[in-house]
Image (cartoon, rainbow, N blue to C red; front, side, top):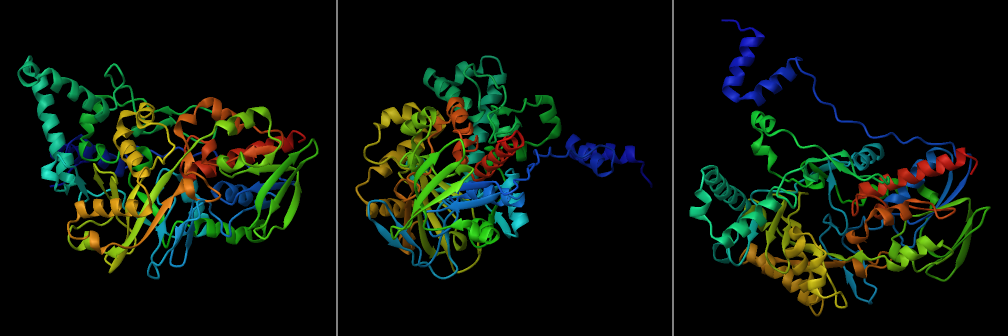
Amino acid sequence: MSLTRRQFLMRAGQAGGYGTAFVLMQSLGLLPVPVAAETEPLRLVDGKGTRVVILGAGIAGLVAAYELGKAGWSCTILEARQRPGGRNWSIRNGTEVDFVDGTRQTCTFDEGHYFNAGPARLPSTHHTMLGYCHELGVALEVEVNSSRSALMQADKLNGGVAVPERRVFNDTRGHISELLAKCVRKGALDEEFTDGDRERMIEFLSQYGDLNRDLLFRGTDRSGFKIPPGAELAEPAVNDPLAMRELLDADLLFGMLVEETIDWQPTMFQPIGGMDRIPMAFAQRLDSVIRYDAAVTRIRQSDAGVTVTCKSSSGVEETIAADYCICAMPLTLARTLDADFGPPMRALLDKVEYDCAYKVAWEAPRFWETEANIYGGISYLQQMVDLVWYPSARLFSEKGILVGGYSMEFRPGSPPLADVLATMPPVYRATTANGYKFGHLPNMQAKLEASRRSVELLHPGHGKDLTKPVYISWGQIPWNLGSWISFNLGDQKTLATLQAPDRRIYFAGDHTSHIVGWQEGAALSAHRVIRQLGARLESGG
């Protein structure tokens, strides 16, 4: 018996709900398929040979030189290191890791293994960076950022024995659903809750649902933005919340509760072979534009242009003259320069603070795959080292690189823990306290043992299988002196200062955007500077 479209859709709706009928209507061409809004295209102005000196070959500096070069600007990048990428740094066999305190580590991983010491993920929402990977021919693979087979461990849970995430997630939601169902019945809370229970439940629900101080839901950045965060001064604005009836009709509960943070939502990607494939691809296109082993020491600007002096590791100095300068180095380094910055920028540099992220990497047999069925994803603990990150690359191979810890560390000399916690949102306080303890351990060996202990808690008997450790502390890395600008400085006044030119000097980097700590923020900040320079040139310079 033949069916009309109407009859078919009615039966599909009866079997699978409104959501099924909705998708089928789209596939039949009866409803339009939503199309993602395009970001503003980058308009390039013919530079006609205008000279730009760029300080730093991180992502912001590379993007600026690459795009300006397309439009006839004459660019020179000065980079203190012998490699491009800045924090985009993949460590392999033979890589030397030097700290400013004189500590040196030499990586001895097996050939083919690597560790992304800085950025390790490319979110699907970061269209600019994904676009450059496509344009430059950087091959990508999926980065598995979450797995319900990964583990959770706390001393007060299950006798301290780690359990799969799926049990914690779903049991928690089951209990909460039961309690909320009882709330529907008049008076049930009085029978079930003590005063202490009520306060703890309100605190939990305020974080679980991202409620405001009045315990009302008015939207959340977990759901995305109608004004997305970027490198412009405009304040981001979250999307208006969907009506509850629509959400119930859509029957999307299964997919609504996973990976809410906008930058961590699946699908995520990584370059095949290491994140540094991206800066290496830029560098191949830029070739002689980049001058390595060129540490900037002095900047002077005038009405006619700007001069930048740099020095090689052997002590040879050189001065480059240009029409404009793009400062794409970390602010922790910019403030050490002999530079004639204006008073607003100098005041900002004097107070700027950068966080210190750390990572610990180990080479090991893939016991997490063979014994725990964990293929990528992250396990979480309530310990000093509170996460273990499994590799997504080369699945099913004999060995892999396991990240046994990635968080902030607060080193001796940091403010008291109570003062640090007072500035943190509640959701970050536990991991901040863990990072404070980790940072105050006496030496690197103690930190490696803390990492090993967390792996052992998750995978009993396998702490001994961890070999060839590499410990990165970004506050100790030369030419960085920090991981990213402290979030308490990321206000509108700071951003306005960073985004305004200081006469002939423009500032780029993720620290000048709303996407702090991500390569997308760095790339978009370069686009902003390119637009500013283009407008200035068109208006007569």
